[in-house]
Image (cartoon, rainbow over all chains, first blue to last red):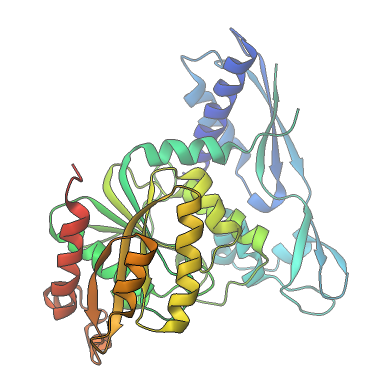
Length: 132
Length: 247
């Protein structure tokens, strides 16, 4: 699963941050997930729980903060909702975006002017927000 | 706190398992960077070394054409497993682009490259050859930041126009103290010493030349023919220079 690699990455960064802060135990992990990454949250949560076993992160409460994706066209300035366009795609196209979110520029066009030149205003990427 | 991008730590971890990373680079297009990347990867593999080839020339990927890659089916295992072509591990963005144009602005190109470096599970390798992004923009700077062990193999053809741009690439790399394996003069059509003299002037290794082969494209798609070809004879001499003191 792709989610396992991402979970492994989150665990690595969490452990590094805990070490920097001198924490002996982590009880809560906050993770920001962009909608564009199209993560299977159940699979991601399971992978995190498994990888955290035997570390100071074990049994931490995991809080996902899923950010809705919004795009802005650089050509005409139109701001549009990502999900409306994503829902029109084929399963293969959706899977490509899941692995490499920037492939949205292949499969999605600005609904107003059909340009490929748009930016993510928000809703892209996976980040470690904080640990407690 | 600022949010942490977990890809940064993870990329470093992925590359700990890779012994040497060769970035095949040329600031100028059309000099044979992708062709040489592919041949060198195949020759390393042929020597029994665990080798990967990563095409990061995202705006214009072409190594899949040289290798004749078709019928792509990827497996997932802690990320995405590279394709295996006769024991050469191979990854290109075309696996996710349906071979359509993949155009975006520089910061997003950089993000796409970070994503690829994160998700591709190379496991242990002796060599990873990277067909580098064109030019010297943000994506290349990210690679320099994240893959400290990268060693550069510079490609040019015997043209003052290519050389002019390649010189700037070499000077930039030297200023940053990045390791330059040397330069290959590709598509050589005469006996002048333009490139050899420039290498002396720039104090970098001239690794050798590859003549202009008019029929090289007839080899594409046939890995065995590529390995047995005259192109490989020339590049094998270059490789032997690179492999000295390798292990």
